[in-house]
Image 1 (cartoon, rainbow, N blue to C red):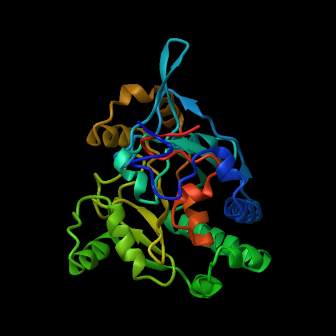
Image 2: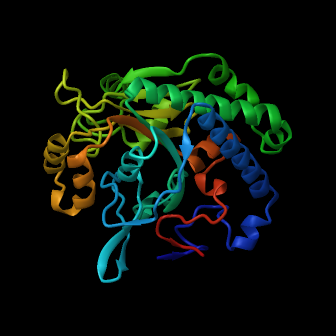
Length: 335
């Protein structure tokens, strides 16, 4: 593992927490992030959501990690995992409230080669949202409203901070005044092929491709209808279009890439088990979750918005580590 200075560490990465936390830039970025969080909570509470605190440990976690791996821990003789995503617990939480959100910490062992992408952290946070009885359109409406409200609050209330960071507020004009765009995964793949990018039609849009699409956009846009097999078992397959998932990503403009992923959720016990087997997951590992599904969990839709990625976009930063008080880059030993 690389130390937090030397080869493999991106230029500008702080050598110590003191260097990072005492930096005027870090302080300004964290003020912007604080306002984003305040605005997100304000918006979601106004939409009737209840904030819950998510678990950090569990016998299983989200298996759909895009090449990343979970971290195992010894839990009184049982192998537990740190949460890569609290998605299964979001579905469970709907047994208490119809609309919930978390500001959730997540840990993913990303490949070391992603340390210099400017987009990956081992430890990061998501604004995780879930709505009972909702479809994909409900989830994208909430995601769009949340992003627009948070950007509006930052632009109106922190103009000095944005100026200090060199962020041109004119970049947000379309975001604040026009509906976000929508395109299908198939259309995105065709556009990428036209740009000379060899994107598989059967896979996730890779992060380099996201940057290409993002760089051509002047406002955020949703990519919808990912192919079955490209995402986890919890993304619901469209019953009228077998092989197509009722999911989405939200991509920021200006080359900042993906901010958020979401979907309608699969909630029927038998279909969840089938999807687990199709995606190579062993249902026996998911005993507590499958028991909930067998007894009945609400149909739902939701999303996870990456807080550091969103802050990076709003503040106009080069990398997501600048938007985390204690950044941990893949493969880099950090306190």
